[in-house]
Figure: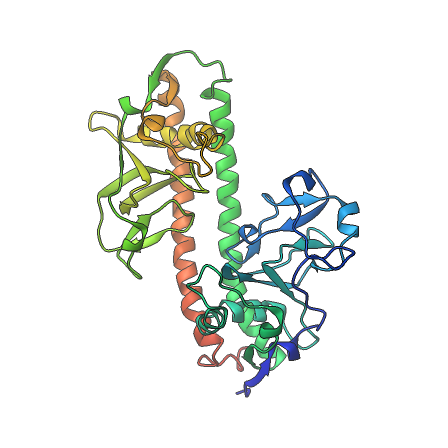
Length: 388
C-alpha cells in the first residue's frame, strides 16, 4: 500500500499560476460586452464551469488582437480550474477545443508539474474535505468570499504516487464519462424533438388548426416555500429557479409536470419531471387537467421549452431581474390539430421518457461517484492492487 504524502499547492504546480487577465500596464481587466466577438479567444466566466466541465457552447469570445494585449489569465488545455471569488469551489479541466482561453479574475488555473495527474488534482479539489477547507479559508458565507493566489499556494494536499493517482482518476473519470455519454445522447434526443416541433408545430411550420392556450389543458401553480426550506438528503425533488435541483421531505404533486423557473438569471428555464416534488414560491408547475389525455403533457412540454421559454428569456419587463407571471404561461398560445397531435405525440413521449431515464441514471452515477470520492481521495479505499 502506497504511503500518502503531504504537500502544499505550490509544490505541485507551475509557479506561473496566475489569477487574472492583465493589460500591458499591468492593470486587471474584464472585457465589456462591447468587446465580445462572434469567434476568437474564449473568455471563461464562473458560470461557464458546471459539472466539472468548461461549457464552451455558451461562453463569450474576445478578439485575438485584444487577447494579444494581455499578459495574464491565459489557460491551456489540461489546466485545472478553480473558482476562488464570490462563487467559490467550482472546478473544471480546460478542454482541447482551443489552444488558449482567457479566464475571468474569479478563476485560478493550476498547471501541474510532472508526476501529478491533472484529473486527480481536479477530483481532489472536488472532495468534501478540500471544499470545506477552501470555503473556510475563503470566508464562505460572506458576499466577499475570496481566496487569493498567495493563500492558495499554501493550501495543503495529501496524495499518493503517480500510478495510484492515475488509478483513482480512472475510476472516477469512468463514471463521469458515462454521465457525459448520457448527456450527449440526451442532447441528440432534444435535437430530434426540436426538429419535430419546428416541422409540425412551430408558428413557422404552417400547420393549420385551432389556436388554443395552455390553461385549456393545464393547471398552473407555484410553490409556497422559500429556497431555504430545502433539506439535505431529502426524499423528494425541490425545484427552485436555479439549475441545480435541491431536496426536501415534502411534496405538493406526484406525476408528470412541466417545471418553469419564474425569476432570476434562469427565468424561463424549462424541464420535465415525473414523480413527487415540491416548488419554490417563484417556480411554476404545469400539470394536465383531469379531462385531458395524459400523454398530452409530452408535446406541451416541448412547446413550452422550445417556444414559450424562448420568448420569456427575451424580455425583462423593464426590470434588471427578469421574471414571469402566471398569465405568461396560462395564455401561451399554440395551434392544436387533433390528428397532428395523435400522430406525433408518441414520438414526443418516447423522446422525453428516454431523456428522463438517462437523467435518473446520471443522478445515481453522480451519487456513486460522490460516495467514492472522499474514500478514494483519503486512501480509505486501497487501489494499489488494481491491475493497470
